[in-house]
Image (cartoon, rainbow, N blue to C red; front, side):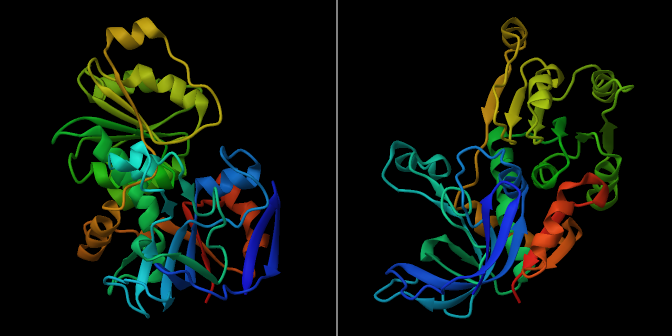
Length: 343
């Protein structure tokens, strides 16, 4: 079966690997139809992804078809032929985080395509309880559910209020997923990015009312104060994965507000403690998503309240992906989201 392996930074190979011969009890063999490419994959390609080792089969944003169910399994509502999104977080179920319902930060967590081989291959076995089906959505839509889960969980962590002023820094796929779920709660959304192209996407496709482009001659803090009548946003999400942006994000948070780090960076984040205390800022991290987020997101896409269609700007077949991947790293190519097909 066609399989793409990241052997080391900047070096992919397309190999013919063996299809899984046995299916463990409690798991299903699925055929991979679509794989979303996200920041984790790009960081791994560049050699900048924490908790990562090589060689590795990438791929954790998956739209799949159930082909076979393991013997003596209790499949629940999953049947052969179902189209599903894969919840790629393999948690132990017994550690303190899992016992407290925080399965997304399980002590023994293994994420497909990060800590263990993922779905950049034609077939893979996955636990049945990690499959979330839809009778309506396409494989491409199902592949984007996990990305949306990152934003959904981050917004849940923030516990936003209606009409609250919210700033989202970074308009990449993770930032876009945050924006989508913020907009379900409050219309007062501000998006900040260095890219004029990405800000235009936010305006045209997501109807974001307030945009700030960061540059050498801009004054983001003054613009935020003007938009919020001097108050500043009470919730700030940083989805950049940039240590400079994350260090600077503290200054944009209102007194008594919250700062939520959605992006991950392989560096130390620092801040001025008197400033942090004076404003009594609540600092939150947000990791992955929870199982309950997947059916909720599928329902939101099915109902039209969340639209993923404009997101996918680049597509490639598995046999062509390696030649195109390097271009997806370049902002001037206009990539918002790339998807790999195995059909």
